[in-house]
Image (cartoon, rainbow over all chains, first blue to last red):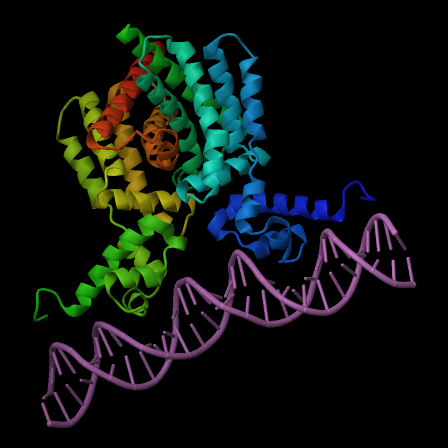
Length: 210
Length: 210
DNA sequence: TTTACTTTCAAACAAGCGTTTGATATGTTG
DNA sequence: CAACATATCAAACGCTTGTTTGAAAGTAAA
């Protein structure tokens, strides 16, 4: 502990950072321990020494802080739930589509959905379940008591479905609409559309059943 | 050709069928040639003999006829575009979520999105692009000329996003709502919600800009 | 310095992968 | 029948994988 960090802690941190890159890029199956160690400048045996196994490294590489701060900041942003939904969608889509450290976490999570490993349990309980509850409360504020719980849940799914579509369909859009790029302006336009579309639907459906 | 099929053709067919199972279950990377041949009751060398390679087998295992007939049947079902959208969503969600041979094709396609191989080009050009155009025309009939082309495209994405969400999020729902099962009644309820939600949104948005 | 412990490393291990090989049946054709 | 092309097979090839090993280097206290 002569330096800021012990050598061991530095290696651990570099391995975790490299693992996030490689897991996000290739998925758990496609990622190789050797590539992670190469990027971290560490020996192949380092992963098993510090994390026990490749699975152990994945568990430590997960990080949901970005998603959590997004939600806590949103709650204190505005009293109007419609405005909070618009704000949430903008931040969420930027996190999902813009290239940043949080989007890498999203990539890892999305890959777990397509090809679950034991890490999916942690992802669901610590990230997805809170997100569903967060959006559930927001939808509840918007439609009031004019919808059943099942209807409200499906509205949450409709919102999340629209968001995740743009994420999943990126390789398709590159082939069908190569002129379309996910720059900041485009992402905000997408978020605005999802907000318009979803609020229009919820208001109309709440009015109809009222 | 003494029998109904030559022995060679039978082996080919069994390999393709087994490949669809295994690719859908494990993805292209996770699927092994040995497992496919075991299920087909064929020798390990059979894949390379009949299809050249594992990639070649995947290319032959793709089949979009279910998706195509769904669209052609839909076009002649009803003159009213709203009703056609409802019908399409019911059929599409049944294909996506109910267990049948078509849903296996969807699994293979979805896995290609998460982890593209050269087969994605064929999937996009032969299945996804026609589907986007099909829905684009339907949305155009519904909103008329009250929306820009970009807005209409985003409405198509909103509809497809809601559909694919229920597919992608199945492993999550098993953990969060284990009581929820994708039986025929539930799938039809989901399809009806997506139709209600999307038609309410499109009608409201078309009215607003008009 | 000696001792004990932690961390790194090159090398190897065992298992699994897609693919290839050459022999062996199988069926068709002259 | 003989000759030939096709199809199947056990076996092996070359390579990559996650993991293990035992020695070497580094670090800290006695």
